[in-house]
Image (cartoon, rainbow, N blue to C red; front, side, top):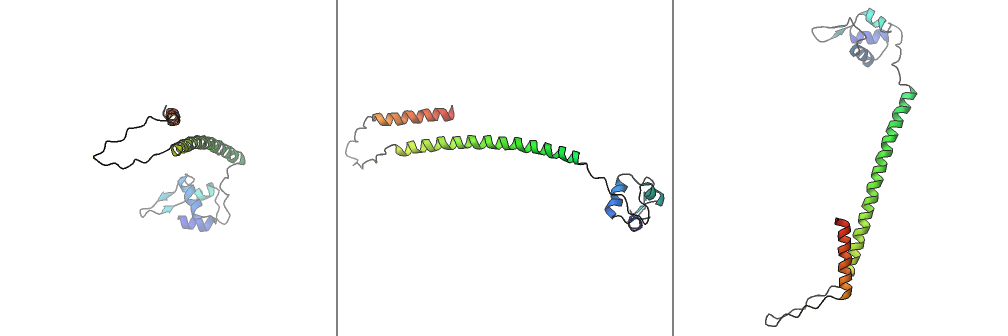
Length: 148
């Protein structure tokens, strides 16, 4: 019988016949020169496929196997969640530090340089005030924390 004839005779699907053919359920099946498979009636009967009767359904995985697979998947997803939460926490800490540095930089007074004539002497550079030294020191501490 061809695959089509086997499907019609056993009232099964073509995919079932082909799957059983690939699995070796029809040991005497042969392929013709034009590539069509010929399956002996005895092989169909031996595989539990009887003409005029429905074939037994393919085995379904047991619920214990499914539970074990789901438990393994759940464990992997929990581990991935823990890693993602740790990354998010670290990123939030970095954002907080950067926001603090930005506030400190914005709080630092900025004086605009006054335009001068080329003929005049440049004005003397004033000594830094005590509060700007504190800001500079704080920035240095933050830089050390971030980089070192």
